[in-house]
Length: 423
Image (cartoon, rainbow, N blue to C red):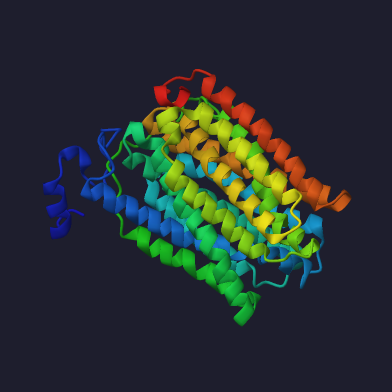
């Protein structure tokens, strides 16, 4: 901040294009070199850590809510699917709006408001309004998460050079899945030694901690986005095809999140929460080891491999008769899922200029939530009519179609796309 001795020392030790400031600048691209400069590293680490802490809250309730709905609330499979999908329905609205606001207001204010909404959502779990009350809480959470995720991801892309944007998105994803992998452990522990209310308290506290971390971070210099042209709509160029592929791929995640625990319990296997952890750990490892694949080899092979692995993992889960097979399926699915988002996101980002980056990411990630919003009730309906096995097989078929659409999206020319995204 101006007048602060430490900040002045940092600014004086960096070239002008790498400065960090809360004020806007006419330069649309604040950084043109790598992510290893000291201010960049500090900003990246801060956003990464805060996002991880915030997503602990979401991960903590993932394995708990299905049992809470079917237990104390006496709901069925369809109710579980609606509760799972409600989060995504609100995020469909929250992500595009949050992206545009992040372009206009800055990344940090949007993140802070989103985290406040996440805390408010967790507090709503305490209210005795049955399944309807939980659905409303999940709607509020989806709105808050949409703002947090979109603004944080855009901030991360701001820090990355063009040739490493795919890797930056993949690395940022480790914060998401790190929170989703550790969160279930906290949720199960709090439920075993306490109660459902203890889980809700944890889910309310962690976004506040994350907000305190974000509040201390300076934003990169950037030009505020002008108002979008009239008639431009909510879908920036080059978003529909990769977004549709993401939508179909995410139906598998919705089936996994809503029904993995119940599927393994029905088969007499149990340990569904551990399978959640296996999936999330595989996503983190995949992002770490495979995050550079879209930049290096292009989005086409990355999307094809991602969809194929996800379909294979879902098929293994569908027919799992033992815990090792279920774990293997969760791991294979997680590896595929880890690569799908960064490959497709690179296509969407490359089709838009820097000042529209938040809007592009917001619109693209809205397809993620549509997939969950559709996939949760769809998997619940199939499970009620036929069984959990069939629900996972339908999700596997959707992943195959997602791979095909991803290849098509990467082959389709779009304005401003880099060579790596279409190679």
